[in-house]
Image (tube, rainbow, N blue to C red; front, top):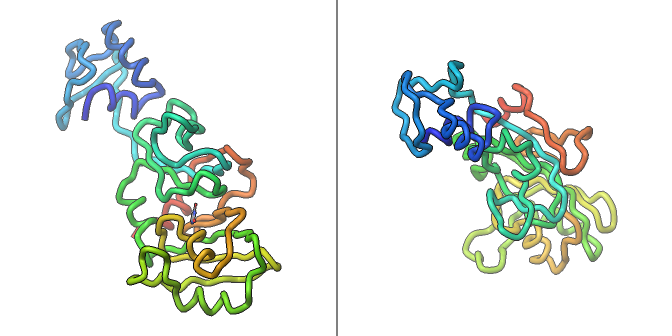
Length: 231
Ligand code: URA
């Protein structure tokens, strides 16, 4: 890993602050002052800031209550990203485990543990629960149609996995999905001639969106929540 990335990932300093530290000769690798931000570290290299050893920290896991209007990609020139909502110093190296559309709200999981996010996203391993508000009334037959699997436009050869639908009101339902295809909820309702007006993700893999988290807020996952994504 590059020196500047390692220091930014394991301290409260951003990459631009790390460059200032380098210019001020405050960082050493194996006892020698370094100024090259792109220096590639090897196994066992000892990095110090003002004599304090910087050690690699363990993997990190967060939940965030995504507001509408924010995107789930890591960088976007035009829109605010979910990573922009995290405190600057912890952002380095993190990615989103399962994206939501710009207009969808609710639970977003964020981590730097690639294996964990891979397991969370793998089809058939974990359920996601969505609360859906539709433009038109939801027919009772939709329960059976979702359970049987639907053919989505452009993917007619691959029906959706069985999904559970609970109708809560004329135009409101809870939906449990075992997979996460592109715009899946919207496309499933479109396949039945309906239209999703509002979509909110409440839970992923047994991890429930904390009701105490206001839109735009985040917190670290508890060890029990992290364990939900472990084998
Ligand atoms: N399905 C969608 O259509 N949109 C989302 O954001 C998530 C699931």
